[in-house]
Length: 529
Image 1: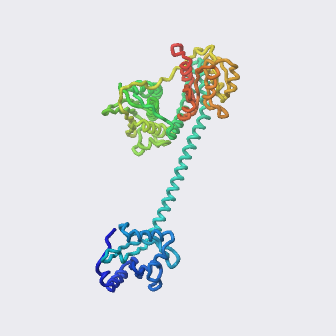
Image 2: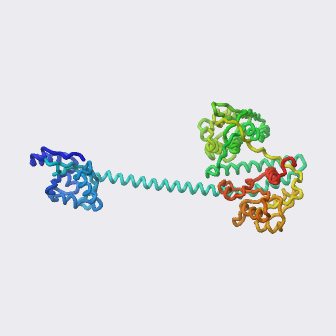
């Protein structure tokens, strides 16, 4: 507690002190008050009376005048504050409260004061000022209201964005399933048609159809991969990757594509490993290679590496049209397509996926470019000793009746996909039992034990292909060789449903991939191909 003031002029010459107080009161903008604690009498300055809308002489000069004008919600707080200060438990006398104005309204007041003590050390007078802070309080209330309103708007905007993102993800998942079904049927039908096309012109046409279908699959995969990144559904599995093997696998399909455009595609393996997810890194490289070939009409593409300390920069150089300086950061934006020579087909998601995948993996992606001269995209990763294989090469389709005599059960509720799958399997020599539901398939099998089962994940009426396979396993007393086909990329959902850890292929599935997985499930191996 601040020591009470003692001595002149307050305790020696009351008249002089009153005169001095009056002079001070007339020269300040604050209301001044002087309270005699013994008698309860209070001197209120003209400015103090003005604060509450009164003229001199209109209010009695007593402490009850002040107490009566306090807001009901503030009265007890003010009394407690005064008692605490005079009793020595409060260091300063300072508080805020509301006083009733003559017009019935309320004025916010800041009160500051000091106690004056007599020779015995006991306070006998409390004097101070009242400052009108009504406008400041109102401004603070308005600001608080505006902040609350803005916060509510931001929350609403966030909620709308989350709902929109969820709706987009759900729409893409639903749309992708509907699109994947006819693509899946086309891929299977082309696989079944391949052995029947023998002429050179016919096989060229068949390859052209396969390339067109592959382009459609690429666009769909880009959309789905971007939606998975948006939803946070991708979980990287980082390990040591043999970069030479990965480059061999990734670059091989683009050699022919580059040759068709008259371009040279040169790959210089670094003979080193990097720390990454092999599947996701392969996707990054495919997108960058595809992009380089798309925007290069003459010259070539070079894939090489540079070491920087314990980091490796994998660089893809091209002699294409280049990127204007003002677009070099924008090329990583989703749905961005450049202007002029840089503008190409597609959805503008390839480089956006590259950037997001790199960020997910902790890699850094950079671009340097000169319009008319070409571009270089670089991915910087940590170097390690390679201990894991890169990615599996795309298997080759064999047309040798390798399923001859084997019974394959097909669980698929889409009639077109079921028919295409049955034709393909029959072409491989298999006997087919098919059903659109678990009950239909069980009836079709009539107690026979299938050598393998190919099941759609999501069937009609919310029936689950995983659950049907579990029932078949229990019925036959052993785990059946099986493959699940799905258009669902929700990793968490698939993990919960796939309790038996069955092989899962994402639609659309190429016949050669299906063949390779079935051979593995049946324990046939490539030596029998």
